[in-house]
Image (cartoon, rainbow, N blue to C red; front, side):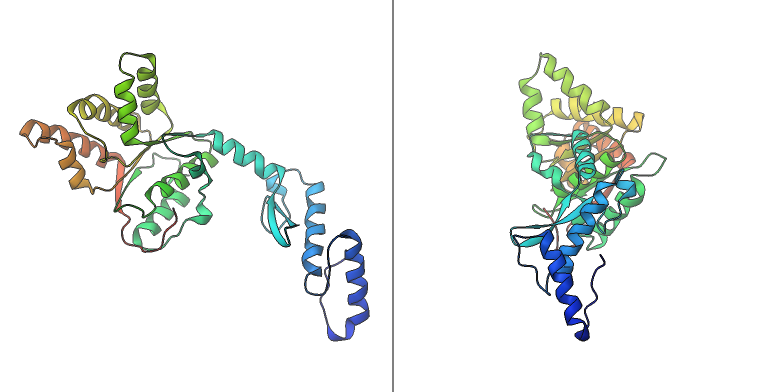
Length: 282
């Protein structure tokens, strides 16, 4: 049975083709306008029967087959695609952020504007490179897609088997303060230092104190710099404004400590202002 290429002179053959497909979908109204779509449903499910994995997928959208659901044709992920997605999700941990952000994918990323084009290139080329890849410091006003972008990047790392930890930084600070003197405190610090990829979301929005700066943020960034472990961060503050935020009281000693942290961040992060595009995903 082959997909039908309709011609005005083929009315009898068209009817026979429709009748043949209708037998496979007795509860649906198969007609000249949708018969080829129903045919695709059949062919793609046949492909799935003998498929050995995503690398062998013969369907148009790899890892998916077409189904007719709720009066529309939809692409449904196959068992192999679901297995990969489940594995990727297991490689991404979030703290103080909704798990639904893990649905972010590179297919939904709008590469519009100079910064987003650079981010997209980073995801396509940088993450998969064999050498150490600098992370990104994404900054700009609220609701321009910074957290969404970090989520997309985490999913790209998951594809190559790297574990990511995406954290809402202000809540992390509160949690660490409450965990002082407990085993959870040590567990959190060790996780921040050793996870394959660390992502600090909304840094600069926390109630900064010398303790947070000098005992938490500084040592974690220094450890990851020395170990060449990827770090990513997002903020409403640009690099200079973040340094001012970290200087706290503006004293010479505080300014030096703040500068030391931002210099280390610069050595392993590329700063990008995401405010150059009006179109974004969240």
